[in-house]
Image (cartoon, rainbow, N blue to C red; front, side, top):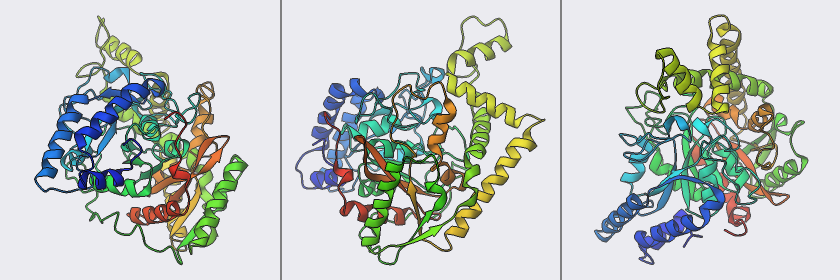
Length: 483
């Protein structure tokens, strides 16, 4: 049963081939057996999962249907979950049990999804490798010596290892798409505002967006359907009708205009990945797509702009973790200043501290105009580049990452080299666009992803292209040895 996709599970449950309770018990046993190798979970919620599975079986017995009814999933451990530890993979929140459900958690629970637990991640979603977690690094099931990508690496590793069919993630600068690429999954970052951020512990509020990680585009469509929708509790949520994301998966790609930016194939891209991306282009051409060269001239400024804006917002968001109201609190503080200093120094790991310091500097009185304001201007230029490009093409295609997964610890002494792994993904976050990564082949036995970007609220178009590509390729069907 562990090899079944979400779509196959929905059909199996509908045909009474197995119950949700049977499936849940099978996957919980598999997690207990295999996850010690991966470290992909922070918290398992066995009792809650079995309770939800039995409730889903009862709803089906009463005639209720639904693609997610009884389907097992897991949540990245920054979605608040009532009564369950929600740690953000940080010592700061190691003892925090959320007093409410995030909107994403509540919506998926209402749809009947069964939550098996909370997955490991980079601390406060800050990282590209899932190495900054207080609970230890997550390992890539394709090679246990390599990273799975971050910050949604726990979700990605668990799905790739067939511990469960799908999981939620969040994407601030590529944190769904990059681990999807490095673990041979399909991962979708929706348009900013498409999915509620309420109850999702914030890293950078103008960039964060929740989305699905699964093995196929079809499964991403199913999970996104349960997550998306306007939420009046979230001031950044957009009141836009939610289409049936599965409805047009089988639409023809005849005449679809795909733009390939020259800037995506510049120095720094592994030539073997470039070859696989060009092979993907040829495959889509066979399906009727028309390929057009385009330019995104301001892409070169994306990394510096992002690494001013994101840390600036992080320094503001993380100021609430002060040792006073909740979270880690140092022992025997001498005074209030000592309480703040030691609680934060003890509670936050090195990468989080680094980004808080960068952000506080960028927002300080003497440097706000020179750094943060300039970065926001560059952000607008990047958005304008995309708007110009989408006047000519329907989809933009390129690599998801410049390199395959690197060895655990290889970039620890040079954080900037890890930041550069986000070079192709962060532009979508800066512009608020939807983006998808799908499997495109292997380099040295490690997966490679191809990225698709679309205009605002065109997630269905991305899913259609990815689904058609997956009907004619088999990269996404391959699973890591030993799992």
